[in-house]
Amino acid sequence: MNDFEELSVNIRGTNTYGSGLLYQQDCETGFVITAKHCVVGETINDFKLFDYTQSELEILEPPRCSDSLDLAIIKVKVKKGYPELLIMEPENKQEIVFYGYPECMKEDGGTPYRGKATQISKPDIFKLVLDNEIGSSNNTEYENIRGCSGSGVYVEREGKCYLTGIITKLQSAGQQGIVEGIHIAHIVAFFLEEFDIMLVPRCLNDFSEYLTSIINELREVGGQENKLIFLIEKCYRECFSDITPKLIHNRLSDYLFLPSQKNEDYTNKFLWIAWLEILLYKLLQTNIAFEIDDCFKLLTQEKERAGIHVLFTNHLTLDRFIGSLFRSTLYDKLDKQDVLFVTNQRRKFRGGSIAKREQIEGIVVNIDHPEVSDRLTIDNPNEKKLFSIVHIDYIENEIDQILHDTKGLTAVEFSQRFPEELTRLFEEIAN
Image (cartoon, rainbow, N blue to C red; front, side, top):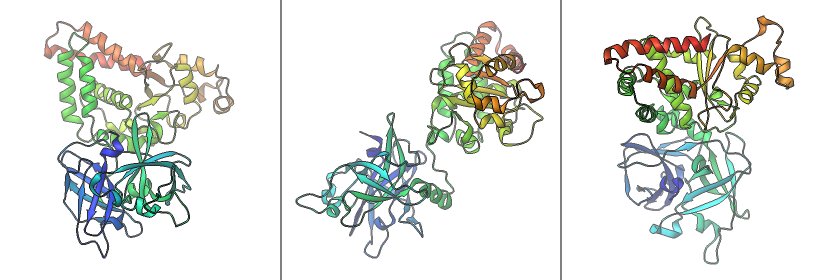
């Protein structure tokens, strides 16, 4: 079963049928997003909501309705887990799918519709051209799709479904197979306005699942891993109540991927595992004196302390990554005392995992690209902006070595020695 089906909602009223989709905020609370006319109107006295298994969802509040758009959101109680709701902006000629509950099918279940997005003008209404005619010998096109209003419109990519908007109505008569929808930008803005909630998947609410991944990897290392796991879990409990992937994404979204592209997968687990590792080790190194704002120094003019930054790249070699970096807007934000930590799908770079300033300079002067030549005056030492670049694989290997070298230390001795080793490691990287 696809995520878009599991997220679908069937709306049944006294005089209406409709569709919607479910955003689960936590283990008890969710929100049904739908078209306003499915739940509000002169002829609608009562309605019920059912999930994809036809289990009724308990309505906690009356619908919150947009004044200007055919959009409503209903707070509900959930009793089980549903797939993550991922979002992206629609693009022209993009293959889409929506799953609705047409009235003609009654309680027999829903059906998927596929087509292409067209006439997109953010943040206005967009249109969808369906692949197949939806009229039949028994029913008109309108009769066959009536009840699908409110359905989520998704893009399928690499096994994941991304919400791009919702269906609101069938296009005018005579324009077969065309439906209209509301752009995801409107839905996100309305969520924020009405509930003060940023529409993001649960995996960005905290680092807990990424902490589990780090601990599971450490258990395979041997040595002092249990003592380190104790320090990490203690640090996480004490310091990460306000530090979340959502916070980092909100403040640094333009600088988390290189090369930067529209609609990046911000649920990328490699990115957030790397962020958590670096934050944990910096906090442990400084005995909880490290300031989280140092991670966001890219957005300020404050240069008193070195900043750190973590990003994900599709590049597999250090040379290609550096070439891309020096042509990006991220380069303008970095200072020569900063440290850039990098991760990718392979969890390593071919040909090396760390680049000091001298090595970066050697790579840069050999980049045969006009944008790099125009931006850098290599011969002028005052204009060099050569910072350290480190793949997360290098940090993980060094941590493994520290665990091996500290075998035999007591828990107290290890808790004193480990920050010293981290200080040595980060000083080595920076110099």
